[in-house]
Image (cartoon, rainbow, N blue to C red; front, side, top):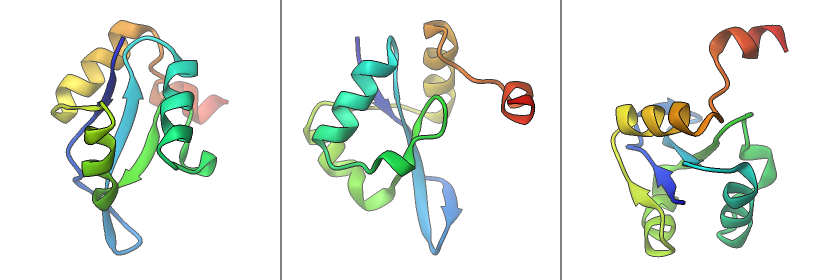
Length: 90
């Protein structure tokens, strides 16, 4: 079981953002995020959006830095991935 964080490449609100995911279960992800002060409102169905300046703290706490492609592959393999179609329909 691992918590993964990808590269902060997504611009929004004048900052760059990354994604924080679990490779196995949402309970693990929620517990890690809460322990690191990631607000619940940052959760988006299968990941948390986290600002670039938070990444060093997340990594120090045990999150593994990975590429965006590796993060998506791990999320799909875990069965936790919410597809674009599911997002639109639900």
